[in-house]
Amino acid sequence: MPFVDDQHYLYPRDAASDFTPNDTQKVTLIVAGCYVIAIAILWHVPFLSWIIYPFKLLTVGFHEMSHAIAGMLTCATIHSIELDPDEGGETRMSGGIPWISLPAGYLGSSFIGACLIACGFDTNASKVACLVLAVFFLFTLWWAKKNWLSWLLILGMSGLIVMFWFIEGGVALRYFVLFIGVMSDLYVIWDVIGVFSFMSSFISSNECRVADDTIERKVNNSDASAFARICGCFPSQVWGVIWLIIAIIFFGAGVLIGIVAFKESAAQQKVDASHFLPVPGSSGAIPGAPIPTFLIITVTTLVWNLLA
Image (cartoon, rainbow, N blue to C red; front, side, top):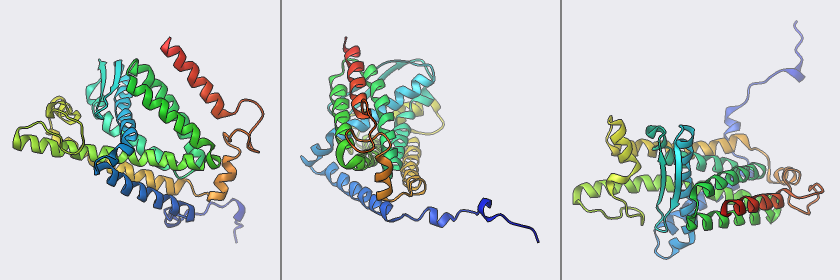
């Protein structure tokens, strides 16, 4: 009879248990569901929509930043990134590969949202996500040059991130990252639907009016229209539907990855967070300059150099 060493035997994982949320994850899912409902209400109620106005601009920033990153990776020259108070944006570049940089706006921002949703299931993952966002913010500031709205938005969001980092050992930061992720993916989904509805109304009425949001855009200026002119194989409406489906898939993937990857309980996350980039003054903090303070000094120095 062969001998089996149980201590070193690899047992198959139970997929059902991997995708079954624990108590902490159930709370996260409930919070994410509340975010969806709250954002949907605030989005369409006059005056109340101003509550989420900065986060709408942030998701527009993700959209434009995705264009710029795709352009940079395809050897384009990025001239500037501009955000508009009417929740619009524009990335000016030359060169590169347009059929990659054009769809990168919607697909990239929905991917960013999915990553943030997944990270929103774990405190330490949320901290890492914020460090990555800080790098993206610096690139955006560099490309934004003297666009005052971009500067105000990013500096304001950076302040919120630092503030939430200090609350309950980073627990508040986790829910903040989750909110940004949900907001980013919902914005992509609703904006694509809005553009699609706008194009339909434009064709039927031949008027350039707003369909879903407050962005006044001509039908010929949408990413889908520009992409359709380059590719030529499908009309812009079809590309809009394809991007919409991909955005929904990203949203669902972010939730599933968060459930599978981060199984720690809230108590265990609190213990782990106390030793990973801890809050200044906490028992887990090491002597010297704490990480958030160091980040503030670094960002302030870089901003000063950019303005010089």
